[in-house]
Figure 1 (cartoon, rainbow, N blue to C red):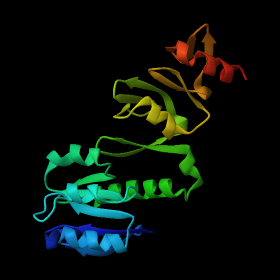
Figure 2 (figure 1 turned 180 degrees about the horizontal axis):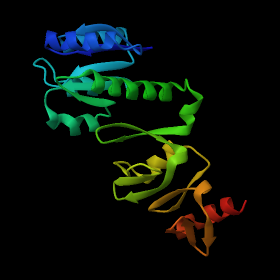
Figure 3 (figure 1 turned 90 degrees about the vertical axis):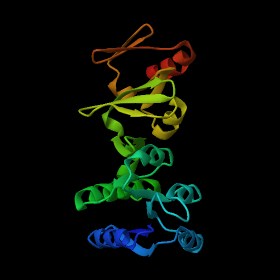
Figure 4 (figure 1 turned 135 degrees about the vertical axis):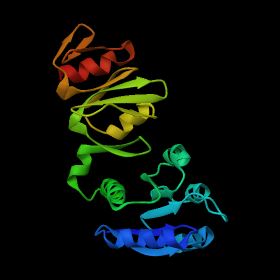
Length: 230
């Protein structure tokens, strides 16, 4: 069960969130607040797993409130203004719900929160078979076994996935390697991370996966060939 609170300066909006949470078996909405400062006082004594937070509030913006939270506190922003989507992405929000919030969209957000909650708490053995990437203004779950290859482009990555659209995420290759934490992945070039299980052939310094060819960079050659030949 995910323990949560909701913060919104409009009581009616809190009533809607309360109603939606009551229909969910995953969420225990402990309290609601119309004053952000009161919510912060409460959180210092009673931390929660998830916060539903409006963005435009007179006493304190939801943005400033979220910046002061503990790192692992999940946040779902609730707002009537779509222009804050980019801000929510930068603040690592689990999801971003536009008012009026319907049940289907709320359930999607809760499912994302539940999957991420299980992931960070390692409550499910399958969590080690997946990673979560922030893209499209929310968290995206990617099974490790479905990754075809990863391409680095300056400050961005393109993650090519079996039978799914390519995901573009703002992160470095180094950060991606740390997130993968899997012996099946190796960086073979400054621009490519590959899964060993999908390598079909290696000729000279060229790797073949399906109809794709990948160069082995000089910096990464020794590590690759040591691992590939072992």
